[in-house]
Length: 97
Image (cartoon, rainbow, N blue to C red; front, side, top):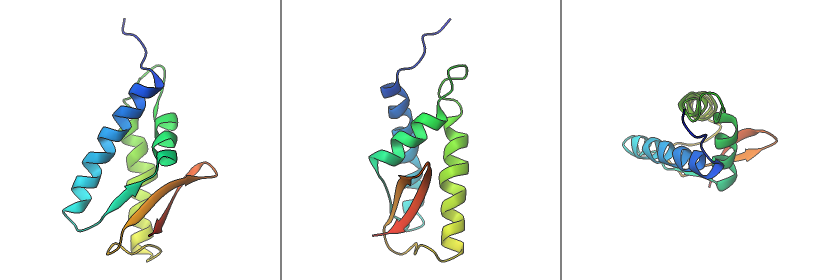
């Protein structure tokens, strides 16, 4: 039996995952800045007491990467300038700096 992760440990897992995504996007010249509120939001919805931090990747894919792709394709954000990811009203929002 394993001990359950603390909220801070889950948050650190989220931060590590997001750093990897930021590095990946930088190769495509996309600068992504993620607010503390957005990190906390992902940590909350990505944590499951039964599965621990495993769902975090899925949450990031669905709520961040898929939505970011849509926003870029719909030209609601410009990938050539810094994109800020924040949390508002229970979802991630994207805007250019």
